[in-house]
Image (tube, rainbow, N blue to C red):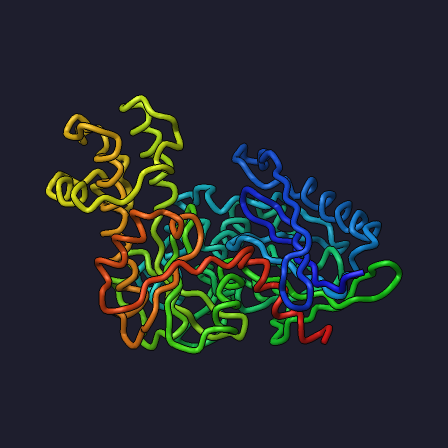
Length: 436
């Protein structure tokens, strides 16, 4: 029987349960997906009930697997999401999707009262992102659905709600507060004033400075349960715990997020306009980051290339880096003419400029890397003191992407450093102290 730490890792698409032994080797890994449902306004959202049932049934199933002896449990989930519960601990509304549009009338009312978008963004190190600023989700709920708002006893960030399901203990922690929520005044190192003025603070549980949120039962024994962590912040933990030199992490997927835990400078207007934002580490320290929607752009444009050149949708997976092709296509007009909304200009892009899928794909990656370099420079404060760029996730396996990064950043070491289940691993690492 193997002693291990369990982590529920809840992504927007995939929901996983991962078991790590005490040396942090993966010994069990299973995932599932759920169809989204509609919220009370008809927008797509997480099926919280189905997720809850899956977690509870998975836990019972693990109890029956006698080859594992779970000694601790933690959770990592996507951020910018709240579960609002009543006095009985029952959710009073949907787990609203952070991509749900924030009504302009609500947004304008907020900024009339609490300052311009730019002033608020500088205070909170959170670009104006609508519902992705989850503090504004609560504000919206208060004024758009006052009857529902009146039923709320506590508002829990998503990771802490998962922990609550197993411990019945309420908590708030820094990684969830600090993920572009608009909740935290980074200059005052406390909640933003609107949280007090709108009487939201009483809904938010006390901030915990430790990672323990109580216990749950596993085979009739009490085991420690973590408070839960925001996924991007959790993915940084294995690097912080194992790497000594100053580094930046480029975590690639649907979003490519450059994370700099060694930043020293305050945010500028220019950085915020270019989609820089702040995270907080599991220790409550500020982390400068910048985002690029590269994975989404890559998915959309490879579909178009496949259709235009009559190739399979995953044809790009067999394409190797070719310097001569890069040199040939570099002068061509950009395929991605706007880093924020390239689709707006796609109709003006003539794929007939390219004689092959290979040429167009090299140009696509070249455009993505050019934008990525800009994002890296913002988060890294122009590579100030940085020795290494670690790249993990899907693009770390893309030979063209990696070769171009290395060419364009010759002053630092650029390396693929894939950590298997890095988000889950971060959740497990902070629990090791409670089982050692």
